[in-house]
Image 1 (cartoon, one colour):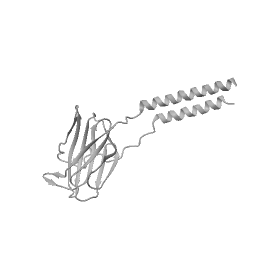
Image 2 (cartoon, helix red, strand yellow):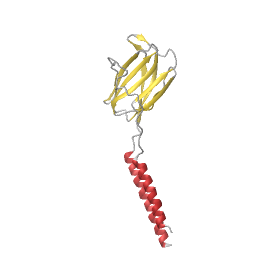
Image 3 (cartoon, rainbow, N blue to C red):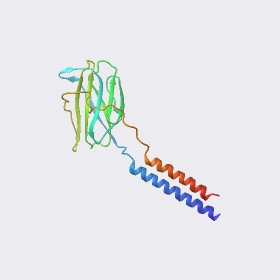
Image 4 (cartoon, rainbow, N blue to C red):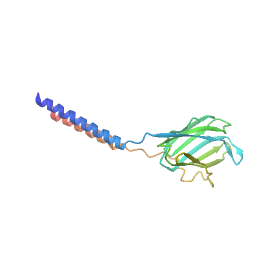
Length: 192
């Protein structure tokens, strides 16, 4: 009876140590769950002419924040669908006609004190493309600037439209599986 109680106590201590180790590793390596959003407006006016916007592409060029799913949402006009193939690229397409002036919201990971440099491409129903940089620099207040992209080439390699590489299984899962297998083996060894 005494050996069974000792075995149970060793098993409980082993489980507690294993779970605490997994918890600490997961906590240490866990990603930040902070996020922020920013509302923007597209008025469709380029070179003094109002255009209907049919598609928007946004590319993260640099910065500590990334686009967060869904990337863009809350469009106030039109019928928009968005895709976020990777955290550095979002595309929104509009199936409605006569959509030139509307608002929407960007979603980002990180905090609003991060810096961010985006490229914004607006496609029109006339098959024209207009581009701007969306630069965000936090210096106590939210400071956005919107310089025009000159000599725009939509096939420039900086505009990466491919999906992100698959994320490998975190080592914490491997550690957890190894720990659980060890506990099973220890239990079989200690139990008659």
